[in-house]
Length: 88
Image (cartoon, one colour):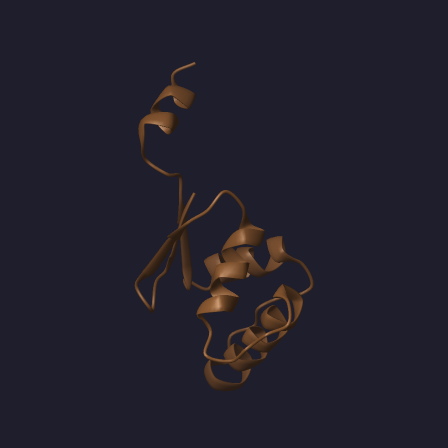
């Protein structure tokens, strides 16, 4: 899957939401101990500075809320493998 952070115009290709959140955490300017701490901190910043509510209890809820708030776009990866997967 191709994950694109719309405001930052940064993309990352990943096999899972968990891996994408790990990538987001490593791109952040603040060091975080794990994905859970990062998601909580990210959600807090969005609430305080942009009045956007993002659930941070699970990775799927976090990613879903990023998409619902037009912060993230997720597309299937385009490539030879995805072509063969669709045509089976």
